[in-house]
Image 1 (cartoon, rainbow, N blue to C red):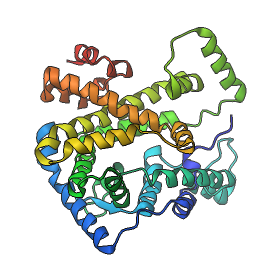
Image 2 (cartoon, helix red, strand yellow):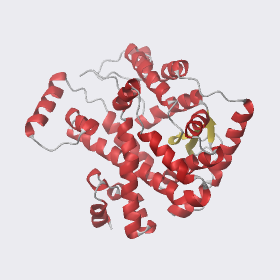
Image 3 (tube, helix red, strand yellow):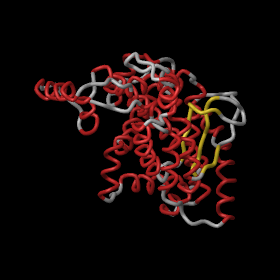
Image 4 (cartoon, rainbow, N blue to C red):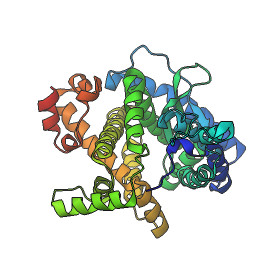
Length: 361
């Protein structure tokens, strides 16, 4: 089946399209915007100490300055980060062994061919949708312009303001609460530098252009259905049918890593929150109601297509895994999970944390 390799996406076009169609953020005065920016910068720094204390990670490392972005700024950052995460640029000779010259090489390298532009428009539409949903993000694949070090902590101010208004949360408390989660991601990656390459390599294996024909994919689905082998439900089960065994193994590793990272961050939020965020209980309750609340049909379709509901489940399953292991063996022994790819939990162990304890500890 023909597909556009991820490195051939026209990311410049994706950024342009995304920023053009992204919804505007909430109406705010200049005073409100400036105050939110100042509070988020301060909260990102204040969150570091409690996160490090609870996790036992990143002790002694410098505390970087967060980037406070609007939706367009996040789209620009995402289109710079995605090519870095998805791997190196293609070679200058075509896959068919025919050298089509510098123009053709440039088109592949920058994604400016026809397929690259089509993919760029599609990516721009996805980024526009996500730009209103992302509260914050730690990007291990971008370089901090101030320090020159890998990794950037980003907070999307208009989205944080929109959600705190919807939840009727205390703004200062909510901003610190969000920062606790995102700073935990920064600490995870900065304390364990191998995680970024582990993620990159598995995403690369997952998104690599297998160039399967339609017949091969149909045969794979048919064989999977006839085999009677147990499969996961929903999107994961579909991926199990559509992907090659090697791709699905990479998919499971990416999913397990994401589940661990999100669950660990949620665990830290709840462990740190009561001592530092006075209204944390009401924020958590309201946020969970919003997270699990009804969506309109279009939102449900988009969320299903891009796997956002699966991501929401990651928070719940991942937090349950971390809660159980930490309660059973303590945070210090839990931190063995960050040692190497071999100590990462398997997807089968996320729901049975005692199996991870038995295998690894």
